[in-house]
Image 1 (cartoon, helix red, strand yellow):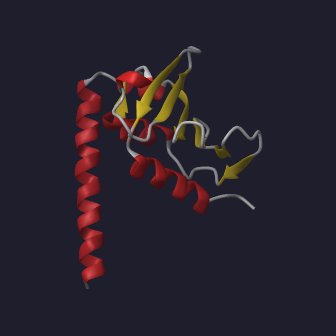
Image 2: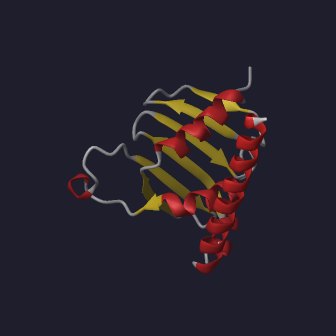
Length: 141
């Protein structure tokens, strides 16, 4: 019963967070930009584990600088949902001396249909790890 209550709380919390992120997203005028995203790359901590999600539903998990990757079950991630979920977690790219001391830092990169890209820093290790865990749970054989 406690487990059910926790599940309900987590669902409500996630729904509220998603609504907040969507409101922020719509208020910032990024809706049209989401549709033009062709890929999202999350590297956390920077240089360790990287998740690459493509518009067509394909996704890949990379480790460090190794060229090998693991393919994730197509459709595991929705690129538009991921773009929205990331909006409240993104920070401008700053030189290391201007970042919080001791904070783990990752990099998020969006690539767009027009060939441009936009890079951000991310400090939310729990969010990044939840994405990596979902990816690892859906690795193709």
